[in-house]
Image (cartoon, rainbow, N blue to C red):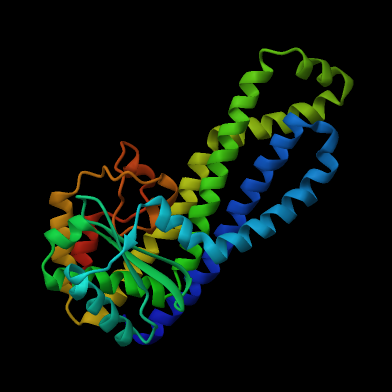
Length: 304
């Protein structure tokens, strides 16, 4: 993959990511409107502009501080002390090679072998690795993983991945509230009485859409996650090799991960797509996994 095609892929990823973030935002707006209709139908006229204003502030907050939320949610701590000198030096050296400022370096307490990058741009970015990764990988494998994460920063994947993580979390919260509200309404007669006083057709349509989204929003947002994530992982693998000039480092690391990890990290599904490999395995991963198959990634790396 040449330099021109890297840049073309980066631009294409950026355009598709914007469309996917817009789609996810529309899902969240529809959920918020449905919740307003359920709880306070007399305020539905102001629900849309109020939701749009809230989403504007929420998106800005996610853009500015979403990486702090992600780091906190994964239990990441600054990589300080002599035991992490080589990790910090590796991050710094590969950042210089990539032409970006060195990101902050964090460590997560987990026996799993994994890593991620987060932030809003190369000037405000962080890389986090697990303690299991530090114990399991050799230096060349560690460099391959760090080069992959530095590539996410250089390719400007991290802003969209962080924003999607926060929006997916919000969609999950709203879906949960709506489902509980529907359950509560089923035990009261107030909602049924209001249905007679209002346009029954309009209310039925709004409630049906709200109920549909409350049930399927987690699945829809998961689809958005894997649509964003899969191509970015392949691109980060390739551009990471461009930095290290050694594809076997990352390929060997992925082989160790395949045999070592159990997919049992204690992290939210909302942030699973930002990791090097999926931190949570489930029976439905073959349908909507956020990451490409490890075997396919290894095959592509060894063909470079």
